[in-house]
Image (spheres, rainbow, N blue to C red):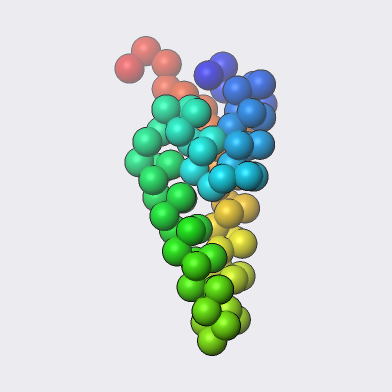
Length: 80
């Protein structure tokens, strides 16, 4: 990836919009991809149980937005 604002980061952010963590996977960040996929998925699944929706739906949305921003602002470390 070329860095923040590059086409790769835009593509990763768009991927994260549809499936949380997919953009991180596109960037090669496997642990980040697993974290966001599981955390957002579990939050949305718990929100589907109507009793827990008031707590976990906003948490899922916040984590989803953070995953999109994280993919869009990623800067790869060169030379390591």
